[in-house]
Image 1 (cartoon, rainbow, N blue to C red):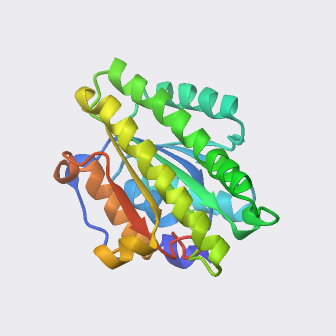
Image 2: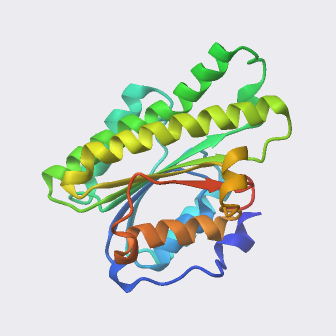
Length: 250
């Protein structure tokens, strides 16, 4: 499925200044972050990739990315626990002598919601999904501060369009939590020239207010590249809406 996507990413602009940038992408899989990773690889960035799935498709994807990127490091680490996420962030931030861009892909499947009916259970799932990325963001931001790097951290929630009221409620709670974390963390690191943004599921009210949202893998790749470029260097604390990106060859 991913082969047709990874070999062609239309409408993704080119930013010459990104060549050689040190980029971390966590949560990469054949159905998550393909266009995003290809965009940075095609810019000849130096990549550190953490994949959440093993197998022939992942191996083929990583091989294609390595052919385009100027340098590639691959890890199949399990980041489901907070301690593992922190340890990985500490290591990955040192591999290339620092990081210029860190993108954490947070995948939410419909199966994750199975059997969760109470508000407490839903809030616990939201916390579980966002904790690892939040902790990694703090570790990476601190490393950027120590190396005097004007960096970007982008946390991306990949979730299929809600099909039920329960899923819509979960998406709304998740987006609210993600927005709060993003704004707080961006304020914390703003004076160090470290920018923190996020992509989350579109909320009902957000669609009524501005109507525009990311709807495909190339959309997500274009946004990430823009935020990492000089053109996006003033943007921090923003949460961008996405709908239907998960499972669409993103």
